[in-house]
Length: 152
Image 1 (cartoon, one colour):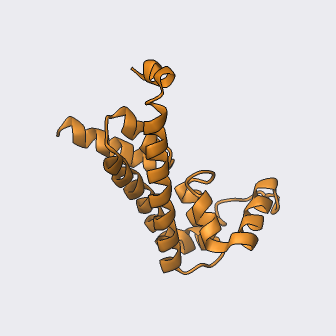
Image 2: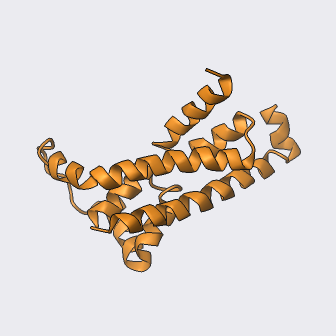
């Protein structure tokens, strides 16, 4: 297997769990903007698809594994509910790559009972937007002489 494919699959695997890994490691691997977008979006969307379609099953069966009672309204859940009330599905999807993880954002939307198609579409738009923004931002930051010297 070629080094390129191994690197791509490694970055893809990390993007299943943490979105920012795609742009950062893509730049480190020497990828161009569109390669970064492809690997980051494909990793995030794999998680989104997996947890969208298995979310209901996971939600039903996970409660049997946990015994202790958790506080229902923590600071984090209050914040998520505020975003949900103000901005809805697209607000949660918009914040998923930056604050939540691909898994976390999908589980939140699934728990609110959003239709699968809407979850997938909103997460795809968000992933495309953020991967382009982060890819361009990191590239531009590395053009600054101070960061360029640190990087090389």
